[in-house]
Length: 201
Image (cartoon, rainbow, N blue to C red; front, side, top):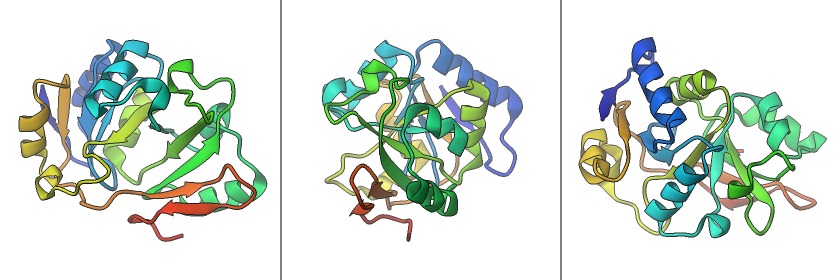
């Protein structure tokens, strides 16, 4: 399935179609404020395993992130200290991934060996409307491998050509960017930028 959504005003009926696919255990490709991403319902084990397979990793070894609705939603799944909270409040929504220590509420299938989780709140109305309608976070991982930057991955029609037989739905939200989010590790005593991307702290 290929659905066109406009960020200024995502069509409510089409959003419901996307959420229906997710609730049935589907895997989707969708726009963010950085690169296009692959995602699924974080509570659907088989869907998370499918995403891991698409990325060529085992779920327990994958460093997946998830998109949360807001800061209070994040605190259900991850531990946030005062300084980190202040930084996140300034930076989000925006092109950042914050790596945090997970709480016991994080689904087991997402719990990696470090017991950490990447958290995103992108400045993109399409994906945020999906998360809102779904009612809980969405798994997120870049459509490209970390070691390759391919220009065509910004074009949703070409992304659809590549992923049409591998995912259940691709959302055309316009051209994506070719720069990933800035990754900030907040699991130690001090915050550390482990990947400089689009966001400037």
